[in-house]
Amino acid sequence: MRGRGGFSPDLPGLLVGLIVALSSSAARGQVDLPDARPVPRMQAIPLPDDRVSLTRDGVELTAYHFGPTLRRPFLFPIVGPSGRSLTRMGHPHDPVSHSHHTSVWVGHFSVGGEDFWGDRSPARVVHRRIVRLDDGDDSSGVIAENDWVGAGGKVLMKERRGVSARPLDGADWLLILDLQFEAPENPVTLGATAFGPIGVRVARSMGILDGGGRIRNSEGDEGEQGPRGAFRKHARWVDYSGPIAPRTAEGLTLMDHPSNPRHPPAFHVRADGWMGASPTLDEPIEIRPGSPLRLRYGLFVHGGVPAPETIERRWRDFAALPASK
Image (tube, rainbow, N blue to C red; front, top):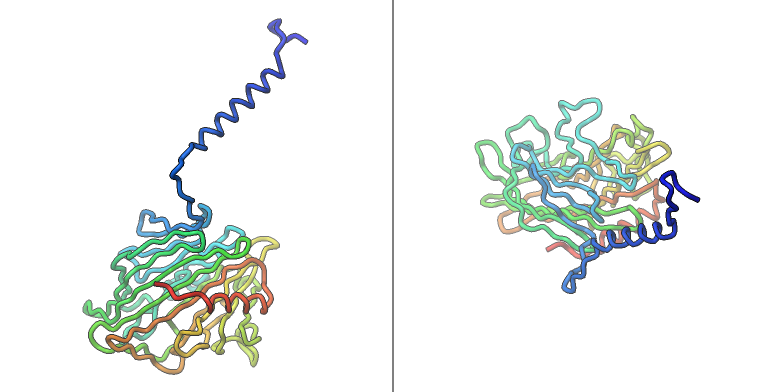
């Protein structure tokens, strides 16, 4: 068969040439590097605007925000298996008075009598420096140092914060926060309150009121209020799951480590879409110079609505992990 120009194209020859060209193009990305080292699956990548991104296989799981204009550092987004954030910035119905609900944050309503929880006092958690960034196949993380600065610029507490991400089965993953608080000169008291030290604001569609989500805890309580509600009940973990996309449910389990003081703590959890562990709900905690307070929390980021037995196994795995350095 002849083409319009009067010649017969050699189709087999053209195909062979195309295959060779494509193979050569692919080979250009496979340079022989005899000293090449394996690329870590999990990486902590510094970014502009005072952020560190924690990634798995090049895809962001979360970012640690620590800019100088912030009232406190926070983590956003918390990316679920669907690729969507399971947390949000601010209350969906009251963004002004709940502006401190910044996805996943660390604060406390009464540190030496000053409010480090809300955004209406002069108290701030001020980032001082990034100590270390870690990459690896099993985890990636950032270690930072912060000052809790009250009225008049006085440093009430010094904090060392470790944030790490660990891959789990499939697209699930585990976020770990290691917190160490020190009183630099004088004893400081974390007052009795439900607000602090950790808060999680879930995506609007996952909340019970806005999306028909579900709250459960390790003790078999469900929902917010009522005799079997999870509100301010003591538990090892609380799970908040709900719809995140059409026909797709995902969730977050906030887990308390057994080494934390007053474990298991009360959990302040609400149907409007937030939860937090509250070791100071009923009694204050005093931090003395030379005797730091250490706390560890886990956030199990998962697809679906796992059975309580599955979440309990994840909590046991978290409880068995070695302490960070």
